[in-house]
Length: 412
Image (cartoon, rainbow, N blue to C red; front, side):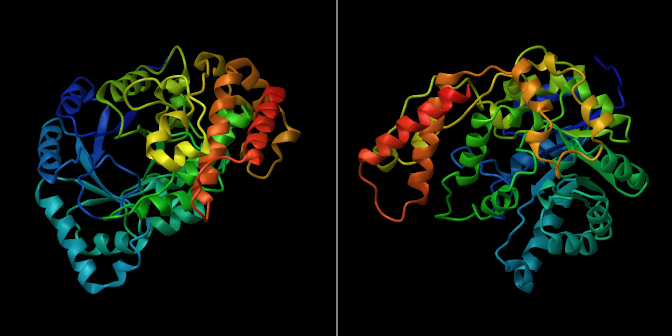
């Protein structure tokens, strides 16, 4: 457990006034609160539009945290604006919107589009700029280029979390130039091939009629279920390991997720503030845990279920919450710090065996749950990629399902 009060956090606003009230007990540890309203501009994630957050609510929270000496960070972090950012009229509207945020007490704006980031840096000097994690700043060269455009903060790519040589070099460069921030509890696959596409998809979810079938998320979950090594090599920082990064010059750690419940967010904040968590690490990892309660045991779905009900109605049977005994990972970063300081991006995982060995110790296999979810994901992907209307499974579909189940049984 660490007690270093110099460790600070960026924390989410989920639309619940009670969450900000709860933050009062941690105000000495919080640098900024981040969130946004449903304002019509592209953003970096899919939100629940049935519970929209208004600008008035954002301004209210900004005023509250200002009294604590805490900043409010407003997100307009979509990477793609469908080239509308090159329209003078659109740019004027965007600049006017950001100026309005600043006039109502918003201190920082997070931007994921470099063109708009540079424009705001020039046109709205009264607001600080935060370069989004969606920009995938994953090396010193990219950081230098982004820093020239004017941001005060940058959330570094999660691919760097086990690349300690790069983190050390970036930490040295950032002194008095730009504030680097690390996203702690949003695990992705190690150098996931879908990252850029996923970011682009989310940026296009603004506007009427825009939707997606979670294609990237399905592939991600499939990979975590199919190979437990991926759980260990994933991009996350445990509460116990914050001090490792702090010693490299990183003082602010971002926690997510703004779609989660107040209870869930406060559990994560307490764990990271205290510097330890006893139990399942997935309990404080946003993508691996349900927003409000645990997922029930999955039901095996047919292709016809997706056709008749749609993807949204089936999501609870496509999500996977692993069990990772957190304290059994104590000291696990020493492998990278001592033996592979540049991480594993250019190495074949099969040639090492470290993550496989640790996964066997720290994770539980859950073969039946994993088999059912994996089969459901195969159906969901087939539904997502189909060129025709699908009505029911044929005999080949059933054979594929049975074969998949046998494969998973043999792996576990």
